[in-house]
Image (tube, rainbow, N blue to C red; front, side, top):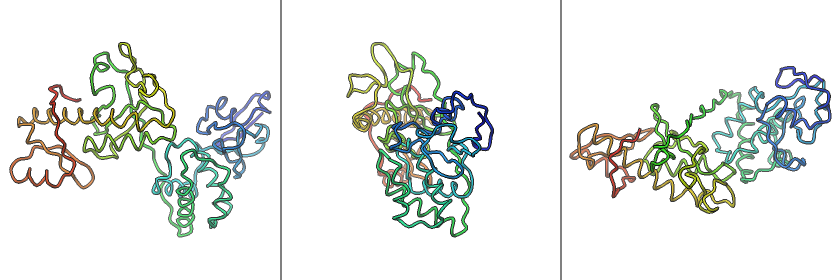
Amino acid sequence: MKLTVNGESFEVEDRHRETPLLWVLRDVLDLRGTKFGCGAGHCAACTVLIDGHNVKACQTPAETALDKHVVTVEGVTGPVVNAIRDAWHTNNVVQCGYCQPGQTLAATALLESESSPSKAEIRAWMNGNLCRCGTYPRIEKAIQEAASMLASGNRPEPLTAHAEPDWRPLTEEEKGDEVHPYIRFEPDGTIVVAASQLEMGQGIHTGLATIVAEELDADFESVRVVHGANGKFADGDLYGNPFFGGFQITGDSSSTGVYWQRYRLIAAKARARLVAAAAEEWQVPASEIGIELMASSRRMRPSTGCLAATIFCASTRRRRFSARPSSRLT
């Protein structure tokens, strides 16, 4: 059996003729952008395009796609999807992101068939695509903006995702540290944060990043959140959820309650170490190290006299710490 997926031909064993296309894509062709949601055709997280029509891959036998063109989220291209992705980005549509491959492909099919849909048409078309996070108003607005963008002739460039930060295995020394298992500063200025929770619609990549950026007086755009792993140390789990007995588990909408206090304290300790390291590097008292709010980011620098007073008055984010760890944060 031959399938054409994202412009490429694949030979698939005939025994998969009645296998749902979702599983052929994910388990046979290793195209895992198409998501499994309910498995019963109710949520449309598994949406793909077959000859331009959005279909639920979990309810579509693979043989249905014979002699047709299947497009998944990995392979969809062109001005329509570029406009959709740009509008998704500018309207901050995505929360957990799990349903978004299906949402964006459904929106692509809509705008390919109707260039200027009304609100009612958008709602009717997207009605079958469920979003646990409830981002429906933003999805509707983004589709309207994408349609307007295309009508105006504006052609945004394809968005490029940030490279996934590398989170190497922790050393035993790092596991015993108060900061290193959770926050790491990279040479390019990226702040990598290991989260104790999985992203399941609870805002790990936005809420947690905001907390850390605020506490560090750092640029939000520099924070990258990864899932913490290999955190077993002594008799506990470094990334354990205190709401569930210290095991690393996500559930019960507990993420904010779990990381609010924990990561504010960790980020505060990291900030104190940066201040101490800067003071040591520049051979000045730690009290003379200020955080200056720049046009696009915040940076640390030695400051004295009236300049220091001006900087500290201009920055509403200056915090005091009772401890100044002597170890440098690298």
